[in-house]
Image (cartoon, rainbow, N blue to C red; front, side, top):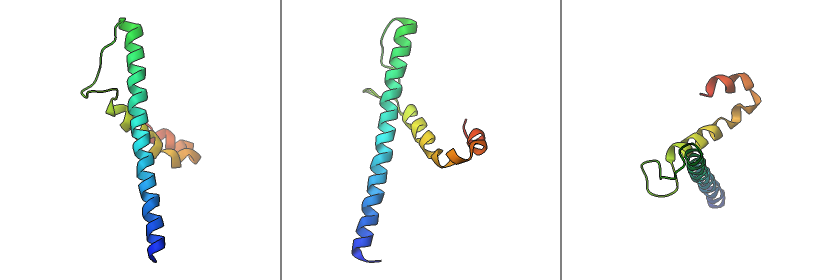
Length: 85
């Protein structure tokens, strides 16, 4: 493998990791917004839920990555049904 091919492969891996990180943080923030709106409607007050400071909840980010990881099963709906929680 030449240096150029190795460099391109490495850049592709880094881009993929950035994409996964973006999915994680987008899931965290969207989940936080959803939960804040839900509790504002049901309880009538806003409070920061979760264990971290800031507008994110990592459980929603992990869920977003889990949904993204099932993307190859899109062509096999029966397997997707059984793998989905």
